Figure (cartoon, rainbow, N blue to C red):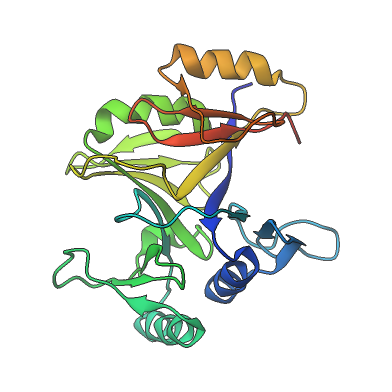
Length: 248
């Protein structure tokens, strides 16, 4: 079986503080916490099953400063105008600040988290009704159509090209956040501060999956990771991502 999209990872100067912010923003609990890594995940019921779809958000310690607008960001869902306004107020109280990235007059709200990572709170859209708290993970690219086959293969999701040329990738069951490839011409100049992790299934071979992704256009990337259980690659646009060890 192919790899599947597993998590969204944030570089953080203070992983615990940033995780607390995103726990507030999503309404999800912190499920793992160490000084150098903290995880926020969708809530579970008493049987351990998630009560809403979503990808874990992982916050890892780094000393690297944020440079420029992130190429990967999250869009948060709202189900009504009142809910959108309430969510904006909630994250503002938690430390979010308005940010202008040239969006102009739009129905969504663009903010930055306490470490400067841009994100959007969307106006209500029926398309995201089954997405959960995170409506979409956005990846900037100069050519969405060219990059889409790679991420469809890496994520195990289905690509849908939009009328404007942007591409949405959707989980096979249609639930959870979308991975959206948006046309942005800004060049990549530094390591991405937010990146994606993919993982093989439990019975699959990590090395074989790494080779498969290389054959699809991925290249090896050195971000100072040293010897780890994961493998760091870059997609055909140069966006770093990790191939985790095989897991359920």
